[in-house]
Image (cartoon, rainbow, N blue to C red; front, top):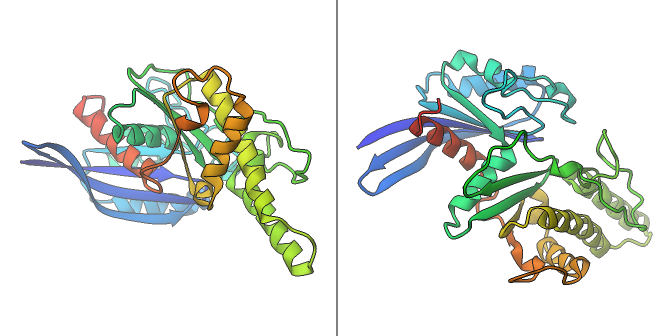
Length: 302
């Protein structure tokens, strides 16, 4: 039996998770088993990077996978591979993952957090030939996993598609680039701001409606789901991320998708039945990063 150790980084908007895992090869096949992990806040790179490097120091890794928030250059042949671009997380703009991790002297592969999560979720669904994974958290992102995988110029920026603002929604959009995008209206910060307004109304005795809070969120997410499924009619659309843990939200999104779809071009099943809950949350991105590192080493890509 041979054992290899791989590292994974899932870089999110509020926290960064790092882990090492053994890829154990035996007659039964290959298995990744997490050895240790750590969660640290996503502060500035100057504060965060030393903690990442300290975690992996001396680990003797065979490979390291980074599941990064975007936008980030994920073209392996690009001179800017691993470079974070115009992210709303301003302190991280122009941060270069490969340069930052060079002192570890380990092969590094980079993809988006949602793309890694999509691949990990599809690994658990061997019958599924096409899957989209949408995460709703600090930001909103999309990963696509299909068979065969076709290389793309870049990764999707699903969180920044434009959606119709509801007439009863007075919240300013939270995105610094365009207020009325899906991320600006339905990300974790937007949902939290509406929840804070509901709580304030309750304290002052003014009328408030927590059900409307879920309905507004579900409406925007349903619009995004329908837009996605009309453009990329994948077999399965997985919804994950912290906001999707809100009670009744997943069901509300399903119901709103069915209303907004109008029954148009549904083929084998209603559009809403293509939606599924994430099976690996909150670990999908981190597992995907570890899998990516192992796959790259086994296939000779690093």
